[in-house]
Image (tube, rainbow, N blue to C red; front, side, top):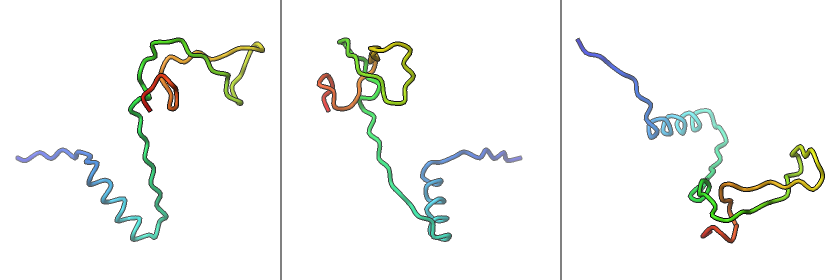
Length: 77
């Protein structure tokens, strides 16, 4: 008796989606995200102003960064 386990394969999934897009004339877009430094811990204290849509309970509050962001002097990007 043979047993079959369906396993999701990223390459096959992409090929199937591209084939469906071709058949149904779907519009495709490409997105590249590089998150090399996204989860790097900071060794210095860095504070930023809250974003426009963030709820601020007191005026003058700031946000303390615990992970690095792009274009910081502390990262190598």
